[in-house]
Image 1 (cartoon, rainbow, N blue to C red):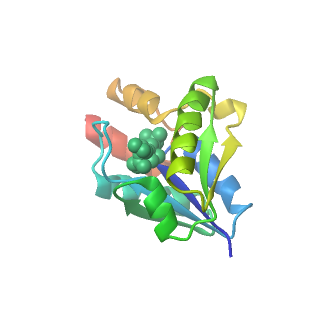
Image 2 (cartoon, rainbow, N blue to C red):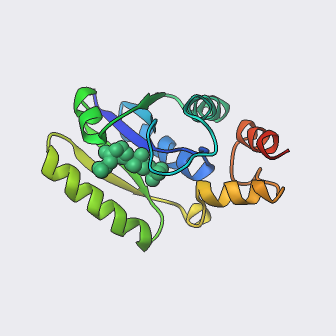
Length: 160
Ligand code: PNS
């Protein structure tokens, strides 16, 4: 039984995240979508809402073998607790690589009982990020091309 963890802030979850999650489910038996409770970033949505939107989005897209949980503290400790086979991260551009390279090196020093695996974003989601989506929504732009319906509704409500 292989278990992958796809961690993130998911503020909010986007079609870019969901593409990575879906592809991870085709490689691993189970995927745990781990939503970080504490983050240095100020979040638009609180932890309960970020988890709820991730769960609803996965349901809406009919992604099987993925579960959503929240986690606190260090990712490598959580991955160890869960007996994860791998941490899966999406890579969009060179800028992501620099950060992920550093995180991977750090986690590898702290614990090396699991792998970090990278899945490349498809070109249509390479530019997509939660921060871009939040900015679009704050300017009352349509976000339906970038996030599932439940998320675009939640964004509309937030900025109305
Ligand atoms: O979606 P994001 O914001 O890129 O996700 C970042 C996340 C949550 C994966 C990262 O901040 C994280 O792993 N947080 C848990 C704490 C941790 O282990 N930090 C790394 C060492 S300081």
